[in-house]
Length: 231
Image 1 (tube, rainbow, N blue to C red):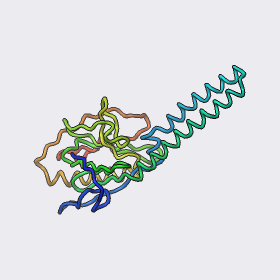
Image 2: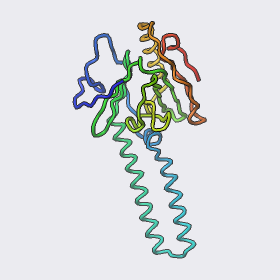
Image 3: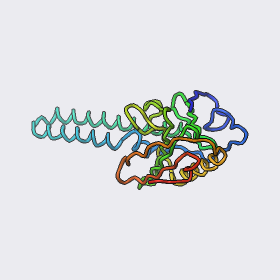
């Protein structure tokens, strides 16, 4: 597992040409509206701000200070709207600058708005992959790293899912057709495992679902388990 800063891409999403025998299986990027909801939590922020606006409205009505209260209420709404707009802009920029790549040997994440960084995640360092399918049609692919590999939460955010205190798993966030992407990853892992039959990779522990309505499946990245999916 490695991270590389770069200014030039010989192949979109990759810091260098692919070695002989390695091929791209899939490339894609987050859907920015879904990334805003999943990664930047704009709906939670909107609800949080709405509580403050409602409280301020009630305070204005009960106090009878209509002029002063109305000015403060308008200012509050303007500030909160600007914050939500900024979060959506950041989500759009993050999605636009991101490119996820699955090859026959690894997963590559090109992320970063101002300074692009490429994360190389070889199959040998991935213990398992969780596919999370959501009712809206988007989903995530959560990559569980082999111990003792770990990634700090803010190194990859919002392309990560928390798995512990300030620790996270690399995640292909808010992608369209996650079932298809998971199938391609599983097939790439199966072929790679068949070619590296002596390699033993520890499987990550299965963690509880994050929300009740998620459809979650797990791809085990190990020679004997690569083709198995578990709920």
